[in-house]
Length: 137
Image (cartoon, rainbow, N blue to C red; front, side):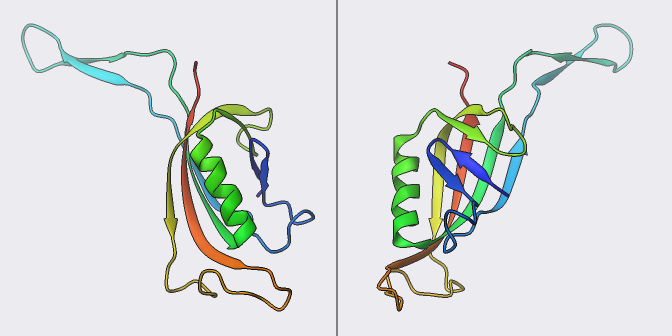
């Protein structure tokens, strides 16, 4: 899966062999519907859709292996956006804000954070969960 947020392309094997693409991308879109009781006999209700425009949300899980990718993701998340997001869900692109991030350095990471490899490249293994929301400015 290739996922592009602004200038950062995640998952292009030709460009970066050390940093994998997204592990998962979960898209949600929830319509706002209200239930109202109908006055009179019985317990009947009516449902009403209260909005015509509902925003897309995405929860993206990606791993960073190198320290360079870690820094790129941190800068991107700190900038907030809006960024043009391109993936198989929205191939023409969708403007989205980064509304939150979680960085997890877990025990099951293969390498401890910031350890040098044979090529003198610094590692910073982490699992990122990035929350995005469609921009409608």
